[in-house]
Length: 104
Image (cartoon, rainbow, N blue to C red; front, side, top):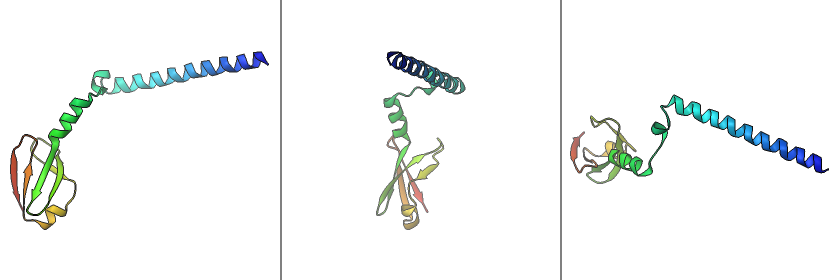
C-alpha cells in the first residue's frame, strides 16, 4: 500500500514538472515571436496614461458622448452614432485640452 502511494506521488510530481516545462517552452516561443520580455511587459500606469490620451469627448448641442482617436491625424472612432445623426454641430475635446469644431 505504501509503495503504491509513493509511486503515485512520484508520477504526479514528474507530470507536474513536465507540464511546467511545456508551459515554459510555449512562453519562450511567444516572447521570441513578439520581441522579448521588454516588448511584452506592461506597466499599468504608462498603459493608463497612453489610453487616456486617446479618449475624446464629443460635445454636441444637446448631449455628449465619447470616442477615441485611431491615428495622429485625428481620425475618431465614436462609441455611438446617436449624437452624430441628431445634431448638426459638435466639438471634439482632446486630452491636451485642444478642441476641434465639427459641422455636419
